[in-house]
Length: 136
Image 1 (cartoon, one colour):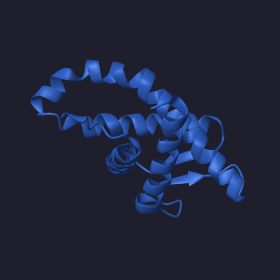
Image 2 (cartoon, one colour):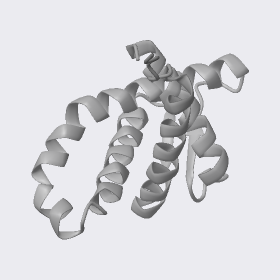
Image 3 (cartoon, one colour):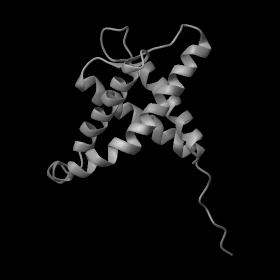
Image 4 (cartoon, one colour):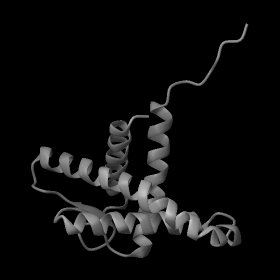
């Protein structure tokens, strides 16, 4: 998939995640948009999707390599924790720019990352071209 499509997939998955895990500003994972117009909200999701893609591409491999022993000990379940950390880093970066993703606590980040990865996988599965080959 191209980079732009990945950003849009991340933005849609973030939107769906905030619908499910989102709170009213007290608990959960929610979005603080630039402004309340639909264009401002959409732009905010796209910017946060871009930031999430950069965090996953740059910081994600470093954290995953450093935590290989924990992946082995937990039989891969530590991936949920790593994804939660990456979501919290994304929320921190978006807070620095003044708008974007807000995560209430670490465990909300882990739950949000779990839901986000499910939606990203489902959307990517739908958008991926068929891999079937015709053999005669």
